[in-house]
Length: 308
Image (cartoon, helix red, strand yellow):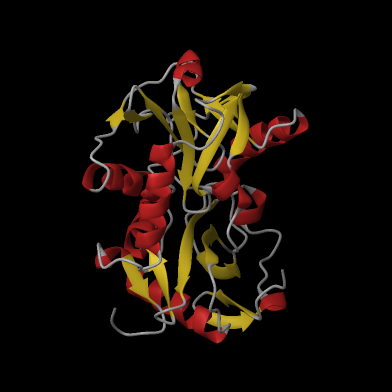
């Protein structure tokens, strides 16, 4: 798909080809960057795009910068304005995936805390076949990074090398994706999304102390289960062999959305097809993010219209 005409650099609209940083920045040399992946959904009937749970994503970005000890003056209002201006400049009227990146700029050493640079990219993202058709995955031999080493609840660019190693190995072995275990041998998450299973009819997911990203989508899924599907999610440790006993399993994340897992380690999950509860969850999730329902308007930031 063709790249958009513009990106945003430090709050300014620039041509796509001009969005560059120097190779000697700490962001390049040491991977000292944090980011957010945000989704924008086009509503054809209303002729508007909705940014889903933007405030929560920006608040998590501030948490990541705090833990990484970035010195900055970025405010949510400033980043929101830059994002909306960028989408309008590119005249995007389709689903998009947004990457908001903050890195240590300049030519500092490993212990630098500033200055920062920041950029925004909004790229068209058509519906994924993984969402409609499901995926096959394996339990990875790589282990999840721990909170006392490289905290996964910080959305830092360097953390994703852990998932990259696991993903590449899984692809070589013939799988679409992988599930990573903690150093204690419990289920953590995939390289880029959170994990849920349904066992004995109960939605279950690893707790926030399982070296996971405290996902905005994960919180949304739990609320949908409670408010609309009459199920309360249990957060607890999950053993590996429980994966083979689950009736349904799925990944969730802003980029992943809701992806049914059809098999794990070549063992079918349930009937080997997307489960009824997973499909009901998808239906409600997409109605919410696209503004096809009036529920939770506070989760949607309109781009082209002032009010919903």
